[in-house]
Length: 533
Ligand code: NOJ
Image (cartoon, rainbow, N blue to C red; front, top):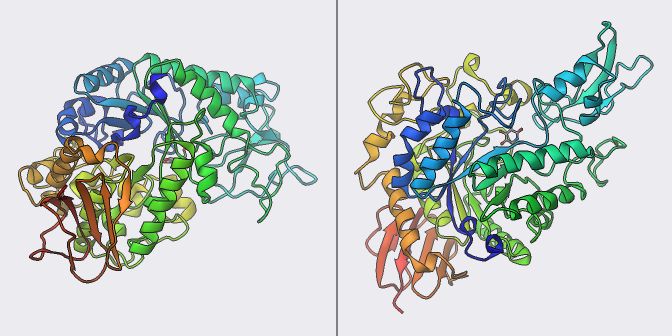
């Protein structure tokens, strides 16, 4: 089976996340769209990425920016049409870029036909496709459980019967507009397997699986109690779902299943990557790790060990559409990321954050495995922390006081002022005026820019044999410094200490994230070296 051979594309690809709303707008409504992506494929080819992953583009009321899907087999008119999506996939393929779509199996939109039928008639068979339950208490007016939602807030909403009386409640781990599906029901399983085939038949090379560890719920609906099995996080039965999905993807050539699996225990995480389950999963441990040599080294070791044990490729992720952009994170005193620590508005040194983000790029692009690039990270964009509250669109903002909108701001392409070539209209989220020197146009040809650093690093990664097969090996290094080889001829050194350090013996410098200090590596700087062999 060619798809499980080492060397399959997803094992060492550079995968670029396109957030369609914010990539490029072709029709002047302030929202990005598929034709915008098609028009800018040259940017992605020039960057050298191997694949693009599109966040959801399906018909949706956009209660959660498209992660509330009304129909997985079509495209929302704001983004285009199915024919345009097919054209994008074909045009990307012509440029040697693979395409990944985002599937959201835990829930659908409350506008999905199944849920509309289920709501319209308490006796409808579609009711069983969701989690409808009577309320607790004498009048059924207390929620069936006290579970707290993934965005904070409650997880049940009461329905009204057709005769106007209060009815059952339904479960939603996210917003009320995202009812959870009942994965114990065979029709749910069959439909999603069919949705996978629908997109594989249209040529997509991979599926990103949203909230992959949440699908199965404990039918007894027990409370969440520390030390007891969680009622909806990571239940063992979820693995049956992915074994079935793997059988579907194995029916095609070279297709990858990539899970969004946020789990604190790396062994549980790796369980999703066993040979008959998913091909890869996002490394959130790395994303959330402090800019600190000790924790960073431990995270890298933990990642490599866990993936080695199941034969899966590690992944390296610094940012995505849910987390604070890493230029901002790395410019703060606390450089970790967790949804529980709301650091919005805390002081940030963007110059420091940018220097570290440049070094992080050389780290994440030289570790063994696949590397994810979130749109705009190649431009060094920072979090827009100045979005006025009345422009916030993220449903998490109202519930948790933290908004993900700041990392979802439309890309700056050209020109000196907003909308920076993104659109001809006011973008759906405001762009900082200071992005005028972060546009693609302004950075192109400037050897000191983030964009040229990414272009050079990705090109070198392709050309450098050491960055393909060979495992990494730590080199002895000074405290606060991470140094490793890939094969006999390549090394990466990252200085996380506060002082410049001497470089190990080398034949030449291939690339640096910032200027060297003579033959010393300054703090928060990384270098790729050619070693004498
Ligand atoms: C994870 C997605 O990345 C996020 O954007 C979304 O809000 C939730 N899952 C719910 O689908």
